[in-house]
Image (cartoon, rainbow, N blue to C red):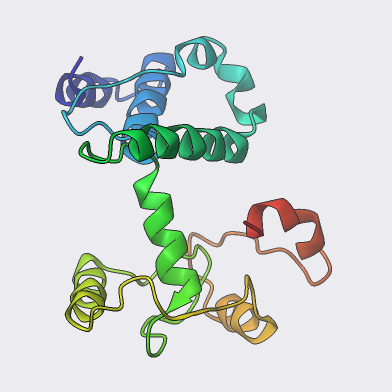
Length: 176
């Protein structure tokens, strides 16, 4: 099934009921976790969405990383095909952690905040023009000053940031 009919169907459910949630999860998987170059939904989470109350308890980080590894192995064997893995997450990770020349967007939480398509295109153009795409210095996972700055500028729907000392509990999320 193509994504467009699902989008249309999802938008009809103005109550945000179960059907809306199930379609949202399918579209999220297709757009963010395992992209489809042909525009078709490749539902690997059908069993998961049948149990909506349990969706919040799933280890989505593990699911994303498992898909990244699986899709990378497929792409490695068939490099003539488009990479169908979680490219949005790879881009967010890359532009946040790999600093090319200088940091053009202040780090924030969520990490993608501040990166517009125009700024991403400029960065890609600069790196391709200078033939050093993928080069740069890798910044730390988090810097106390950057997190304090993010806390001061917090306006991302008033998301609660971890307090000092609580970052250790999130270690698996922040590390490669």
